[in-house]
Image 1: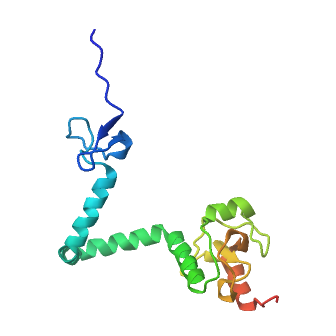
Image 2 (image 1 turned 90 degrees about the vertical axis):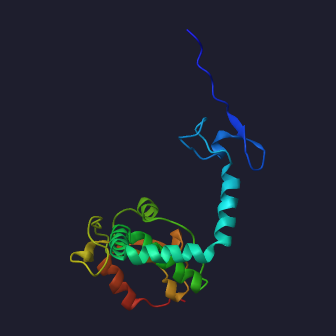
Length: 182
């Protein structure tokens, strides 16, 4: 029985001529070895140059596609936003914190819950993690909101050490009564 041929661990890029591991090449099913001829770095650089040389044509192409498929694009954007509200809330917090130069760090709601638990830090009752988180929806009062101990608007940083899990209604009541401890 003849031995199967082994594939090489690396190959030379056709653009920069440097021998690189196969992980540095995008896959391409119709090529002989299953990988593109140019490495990821060279491809990225050529795509960047192509974009810079054709900005207006590419933008016009995107505008034409959007005009032709406007309803589909709006439906997709609406669906994506409704399924990823937490991403928009995180982005809003980071933006406000950067704008006020309060300081910020990246954290997720999962990290907040893992570190501080699933009970509201204000009233100590359990938070309904399946409830809506926005006041636009029925039942939001017991849903999760990330509460800043010192609010961003009062020079509080958007950091993991300055946030706690809370009910939506508790967080809103706190907003109305927060006094600067200093």
